[in-house]
Length: 135
Image 1 (cartoon, rainbow, N blue to C red):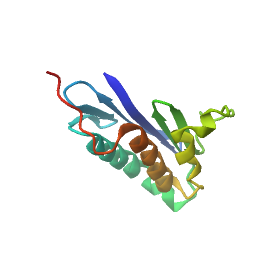
Image 2: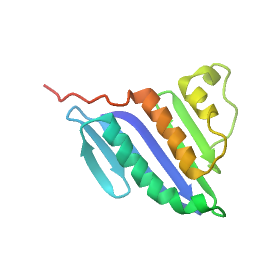
Image 3: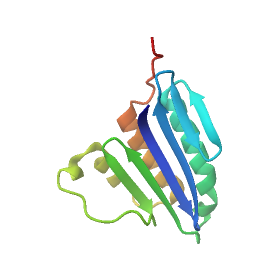
């Protein structure tokens, strides 16, 4: 299996997870609700975004600590109060697609952080691309 992306979210001490892997037959999206098989990257992104978005929605009203972490092939990006973030990135990392997309986000809340994370995932996974079935 090839890991395409993962999303993790925290809200007031609780966590939600979503990840997508290509397995030769398509893509499996694993969330806290269980695995879902999908045909393309767009559908995998939609399943993960919907799962994490429903979890984060109450935090968008303010007063609730939250964080989002997206992982793609080139690294990770953190938003909000993610406790696993920290340290400074190397100068070469600052020029990556991940870093350039992450810089577009300016603390507009958890759902906009999720949308920025989705842009990173699309940048590394080609959007509409379908995963071909194994021969």
